Length: 434
Ligand code: DHB
Ligand code: FE
Image (cartoon, rainbow, N blue to C red; front, side):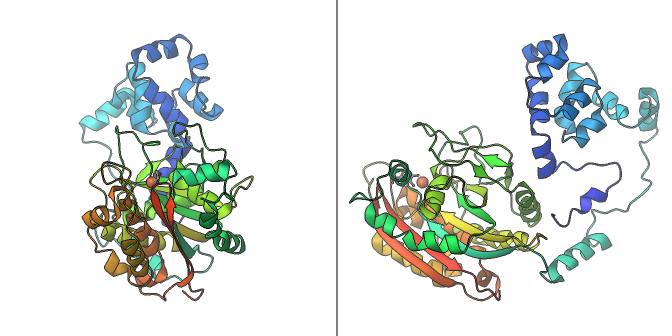
């Protein structure tokens, strides 16, 4: 159960949050389709048939057919999307608003002309120092953990597509690949013994879910499931990823209210950046052993986020997880890197010394490491070495970054090469007392 949804108490008001938007995904997609004249005519010609083309619930369809906007909003609709139905019917926003109030259009218009609806209950809740806000913040800061979620460990690993191909095609025993996969044997056993309920998996999309139409800096997957992307060779033959919509929506709310900008993603496919780390850590199971919240970071299109911001974001994600009132064990994984360059005359660059110093600092001095400017990643670890900045999100989520005890290093591994890349891997276990 998510905490701190104080906005659920506002009378006569549905706040359109990540949970509502997931619930209303197809209803709102249907509404968007009415922005095309051709679709408007098809809808008007046979509403039921047109609605049946969409994966909407019967309740949502009935709400649309009845033009019952309150019912549509309860079913996950948002007024800006629903307004496309009104527009198709030739209605104004004022007519649509009136329809939800129990007043006639004339009464509603008259009310607006006389100054609008008068505030009858509640306080100026959004102003600073309002008692409700302070109380909510205090209870969150001081309440004992009780049945709350916990961060139990962080895992760091590279994510080369060729590693996925080697696993999928049964090549892990070949001479080229054997030393790499042996390096992960301990970690597969470790994960089996320390299976979490949820992995919060920080990775980057490689032009598969996000085209250049929109490139979010930080995107959290709030869907119930995510399919492996077809990156051009067909989707990897791996299980679909089962998400944790309630925890993801809670993290989105907490982290955004903690001043970080996240993009909420209700639908996306996940590429090798996410599935290869799962394969490395879990092998080839029928189903992934736990739920996974995908968290995509833009490291493809400049500007990319700084190490410092990633580290601070990790701390905010920890706060969010620890304020979720279900006793879930959550691991946070940082993926990508280590040194590699996939482009231009410098392609193939590997910088072992720099990579190992990065690992040293990440383990023992992450706050210092977080100050390293992004150009140093690119200069020293190659243009795609910038993926390493994502490891600081996972590291920032460990207790010591927020004044708690240091984690225990359970595994450290480094290997060159996998395709064009130096592979690095760490497992840090949280002190159970933290
Ligand atoms: C390779 C590495 C990557 O991180 C990636 O996203 C694509 C390719 C490689 O080494 O081939
Ligand atoms: Fe990559």
